[in-house]
Image 1 (cartoon, helix red, strand yellow):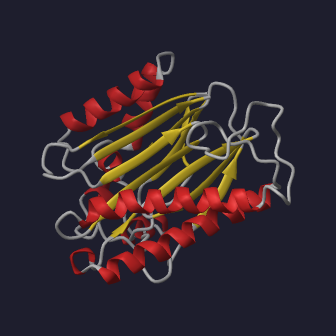
Image 2: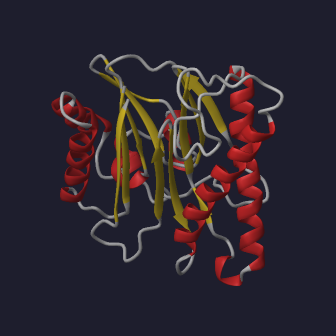
Length: 265
């Protein structure tokens, strides 16, 4: 598995409120929002809180479950090595969701305790690859795409009013790019409760290409354009694919921060 992550402020914004994490077999993108620099705080803190919570949950089960240490030297600090957990698929999904819910509570508490952070929030899209299974947890409108055998599929749903209108056939795909409420999120991290938390799993195959991105990419490039760039560069490195996507998004305006993680299986 080869991967590369990049984040760009874009051509309009003065602050990059995106934050990403890409290490070993865990990948996260968070796109923050809020006054002043609160969006930047929201995205970085959400990832920090999640990583710490997930680590604690896994560590608390070490004495209860068998950890597969034969595949590689396992360290409790999964930020340094791949964490291969011999838990059931259901336990892994529950652990990921629990960690995100804890992170949400901590971020909400932080917003209440600091007036300058009041109302801050962030999207959160994460992929954890364990024993050839991809576990996704997702809130907001950052995205995860899977490119396989000349097809590009969006695996997550945007938690936005406009996406629901499109999904229900009320507006067209093209209209989602210009709709006046296209930036209205229906679920974010940083509220008292998470209105919508999406959890899914899939089975990565050899030659798959996985794309995680903030909406700064897919608001500048339609899906067919993203697919075209990935297909054109699929035999090159993940860095080459990521930079090609970023370059094209900037050419098309770069109106928002743009964050991209490319994973080649």
